[in-house]
Image 1: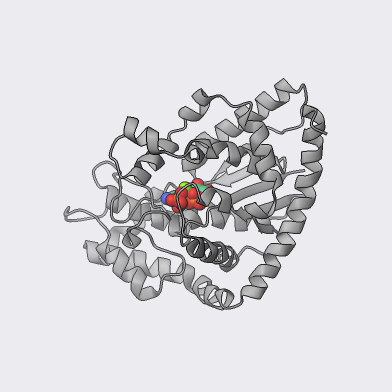
Image 2: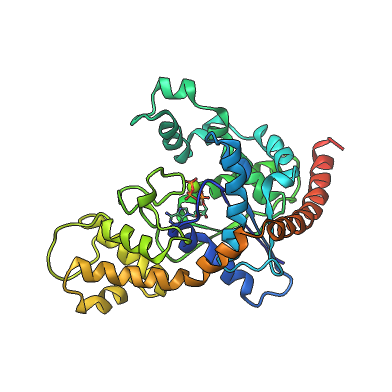
Length: 343
Ligand code: ATP
Ligand code: MG
């Protein structure tokens, strides 16, 4: 019996990378015929405050994130949809895990240093950055392990920027099982989506990221057709004339847009490039990308507008999700307490 689990942070609007790298596969998995499987998808609000957030903004983002998940097609009938902070068992388990995780292992996670630099506005990680960095920025992969394991999840569908953290989760599950002579925690499988990591439209050496302050770097699933067109028109490409071809090193911007098409259409990179033989210049290419994106998100955008106007419905979905989630989490934490002598 599988439990499929994943979270997304309420750090901003959901973008094309989140959609292709995660949410679309959550939807497809939950719609597949899989009797007995559980689907738990939520909003990682505790993770969102590792970078400082103004309370009103956080509150708004928490609601909008639920609306975005529903607007992206997740069904509250098939999936448990909830806020992480509504289930306190996550943080309790996180503490037990903090006590069995070495600093060395955390330090090897590549994401936190770039996050720390970002907060301190520095191009390198040095002593000054270390002094100012909050412990949450270093420790959040432990909370992530607790998020997954509190449900004893078996499969985690994420984008490939999360592979390293999932490896840490497996390490923590192993350490716990070994330390307490148990097989309680499963060793989770990472379900990587077939589409490649989507890069920033403005700077294709970085990934597309919700917390990127440059709004033009992301296509949000709720952008109007005019905004999509404008952002794609402005997307960094190159001045190479002639046919479009895929070369991530030489043509990162163009190749990123090819990835986008491949993600949206489900075609391989080679097929996409072959299909683009009629394209004469960058303008035609970009117009084509715009059209595909606008079409993919047409319904999402309309549904999102309706949902954000109906807070009581969003609250109802979250309350139901929280109750489902807590039922599993409280039973599991009771077992954990017993195993470590905390009962
Ligand atoms: P933040 O900048 O605040 O970290 P984010 O855009 O990275 O936001 P997350 O909430 O951290 O989004 O991640 C949600 C899911 O989206 C994860 O499964 C992650 O792997 C996936 N994801 C995030 N960015 C991309 C991307 N550019 N391409 C593909 N998948 C992505
Ligand atoms: Mg992220």
